[in-house]
Amino acid sequence: MCPVIAKKKRSERDPSFDTIKGILIVLVVFGHGLWAYRDESFIGPVVQLIYSFHMPAFIFISGYFSKDRFEPSLFKGITQILFAYIIFNSIMMLYCFTVYGTTPKLLTPYYSYWYLLALIWWRLSLPLIVRSPMALPATIAFSLAVGFTTDISNQLALSRTIAFYPFFLSGYYFNKLNLREKVRGTLGSPRSSLAGAALIVLGSALAVLLIVRMELNTGDELMYAYADNRTIDMLRRLLLLLSATLITIGILMVVPSRPVPIITKAGRHSLTVYLFHRFVSLTCAVLYPLASTGSLIIAAISSMLTVIIFSSDFVDRQYRQFQNRALQRVAFHHGEKQNVGPTILILLAIAAILWQATC
Image (tube, rainbow, N blue to C red):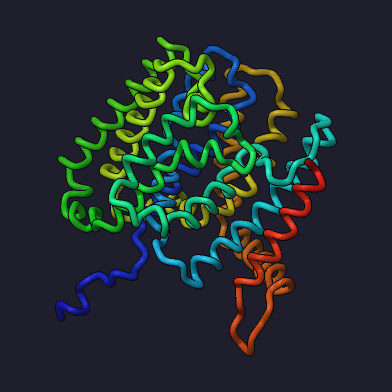
């Protein structure tokens, strides 16, 4: 066989990353499905363990596929993310206003849609951040320091953006330094899988120790201001970051290079699942308000059905078509080429006006 033909093309999609995203999106959906029942003693630790690493690992993968140059594809992607944020966060904003009477604020993310705003911040700042050789240690320092202030909050998702930036940047460097290529030969081997499993167990054990012995709320501890504003709180966040790092590396090492049915497809369409799944979890929480072993089973079944339905090619295609048609209505065209820059400016202007009107 000709070596040129046998060699895998660099541009070919790596199914292992889709598998990783698939595993993580399943955990995201399952974690949110259990969130309403987290006060139960047997459900709370499960939720806290999932929250200790699922978004850090997801953000790591987001960084892996992000670009360090300002180019049309970057702005096109940001336009699509901003569009999704405005649509879905607005729906949740109206839901909270109707059900809970909360004051509508467009640029305060509701539920899981903070990730969309944070992703915009990360991708816009990455080409500037990576110019510094001290970028990674600086983002770690800021991640730990931001917990000491309440001035940086969930508005514009700034607290989460800063707190999780080290994972995004680590994912970018993992790709930039070709670390995936360097370790590809060992991935999937028994030794690699065993080492990865050991890291997952070690990271999970550290997280469980923090959750049980220190009674941490891992989501709050990773993302918001420290409750007691003490140095020990910063140390606990550092340990949680270490735990999430160990689990993320472990997942990278144990995931096979071959596609996994359902899971790999879910990863390929993970954004669509992420956008729609919260409607299902909130509905289930209303229909089944009592926490019990049955709630755990219901959450597991509904989560899997949610992943299967919203990761289908049909649903993903319908959403993409809706998105593209909507963006074409507000974008300027030059011949056959679409200039996405004005689209971003228009959407940002609309967001800013609505934000000011609701402050």
